[in-house]
Length: 241
Image (cartoon, rainbow, N blue to C red; front, side):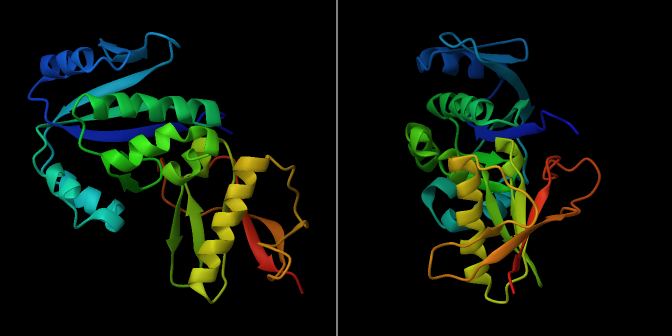
């Protein structure tokens, strides 16, 4: 098992070239420097790879698909004006690393970035939303930033928990809204409580809700080398009869 799955954040911006990006990072006084292919925090010395790319005409469509909840906003429209795209590439697999990478993305937003798309989960956030989540990391906001819930024809499953070093979850409840809430609470419980989970254990959203039993699942097949794949595993929540 890969102990450090790759976490990638995409930030489109107004920078016309690499030199303009470097100047913007320095001038915004974010506490980071960019040299070579490395973005580093001068205080913590945390660093991650930064890949600078030219404008991508498909970027607006990608953000709209991953950020449907803010697709009709001025912030989303601004994505279409981007001049370049940067990708932050780091090791996921722990809360500490994930939060450090989130803060690096926040620095790029301060330098003019137009939004953040989590390539290793498939969701996108506006600059204001991302900055607020970075300001509330102590309240476990990384869970909201890096984990999404996908509704299929028969099942609902989470994606992105590997960014935090945890298992994803899946269920086949007919009521899709109930399924999403079950998985949201279950994955939140994993992240905030760090329980020792085993197959056969039971879980319930609250004392009045249905009880589900845990069993190991083979995982969602995203395709070979997909950034969505979770090397840790997936829990299936099935009704406890």
